[in-house]
Image (cartoon, rainbow, N blue to C red; front, top):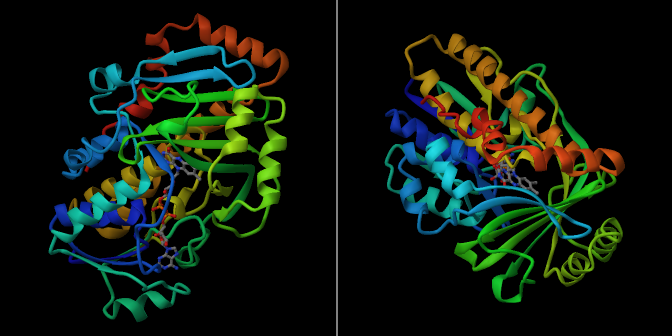
Length: 384
Ligand SMILES: Cc1cc2nc3c(=O)[nH]c(=O)nc-3n(C[C@H](O)[C@H](O)[C@H](O)COP(=O)(O)OP(=O)(O)OC[C@H]3O[C@@H](n4cnc5c(N)ncnc54)[C@H](O)[C@@H]3O)c2cc1C
């Protein structure tokens, strides 16, 4: 394997370039935007993702910038009463071998770019978007040994892969905003990730040390807007948010009414389908398997994909066999993660008797049992 072309410089594309460089393989990354640092909002990085960042030499640069929350807490959105919690900071290292962290997405991107700039095997071409799959050769000039589509949920590259999945509206929308710690209400705890749960909706809030702020994401049912990325909230989106959380605790309604400059995100997934053409093209990250954020694993899966792909295709196995193995192995893991996301949605958005049963079951489970349920997910050590 001598050369790799990567379409898209999101988390998947940047980590991919780095993982190939660590294997001694040169890559060129083609990114359609002219600048990479404007993307807003926060990210939780679970231990399975921070493990890979550590292996790639990126985690050390992030440790002073991210926060390692003490606990993940589940709280009623209607009464603010605690339901259950898991002490992530303590057990992430002890049990899963790597930190659980939260940070601003732009910080991760900035640090990845710093590491990449010092890496002579990587060329990053900005303002170099592909319009369709045929464009890849036009951009790369020479035919690379492997071309990776890391161009997100609305991937153009995907049309190169026969029988690939398609974007599908999840029925859910999200509103995201960042609130400075000094302006935040006292029920937002800067030491914790807190999920406020309620009928058909939930809100996740967590601290961003690098921004001195909380990241807040509110999710509920919503209408399909068609092919749309995130947008500034218009008055219609804002009143939809107010209406969806109208029966929630007064303090939460006050927070949502105050929300500074929220963005609105219709949530699309990518349906099951092929990720490779069996020859020299492969999809990773959201382009392959965008998923709803109920398990906070989209970026983590993109990071694992990128790292494992580089390990598998440089292992000496013929490329078509390596790609077939990659697809099968990663689809098995991603499918389990998607199921966990569906389970979380069911549990978070429960109503009536199901909600009561959920609260009872969660209260009866020990912290050790709750953690053990997550060993397969957070304790996973991606082979590279
Ligand atoms: C509300 C919300 C909360 C989330 N929270 C979390 C979380 O806490 N933890 C977590 O792990 N995940 C989370 N995710 C998921 C995570 O954000 C995504 O899964 C992840 O960013 C996907 O990365 P990617 O690189 O595959 O795609 P993207 O981030 O979409 O990157 C694709 C890149 O390709 C570029 N591109 C697009 N088209 C072209 C083209 N034609 N030519 C060239 N370049 C192109 C884009 O400009 C972009 O730079 C969340 C998602 C949402 C919506």
